Length: 132
Image (cartoon, rainbow, N blue to C red; front, side, top):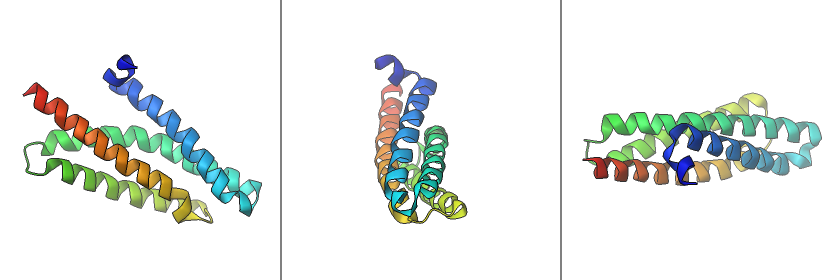
């Protein structure tokens, strides 16, 4: 596990696979009342989106923190910007695909993205503090 945590690419890939399976499964479950086709479409949409999002979100937070670390409340800004982008994109992707229960579909992912963002940015800040 330590090797995964130390290697940014591997850490991001494992997280992305977990996102695909977890959020794709949730989307299937929450949309199953609308029929199997709608449930599978929602599952593939949310799962694929979650996979890509996890990869991109991690890199985005790294990039933002590198540019804002000297600013007071840098962690808060990085988390707020990241979450705003994630929430907007998640809603838009599901709206474009016609997901019937958008809010319930994205809610677990939004909550998890928020927790993930907080933990990730705090981790970046601690690593940065140790390095300086």
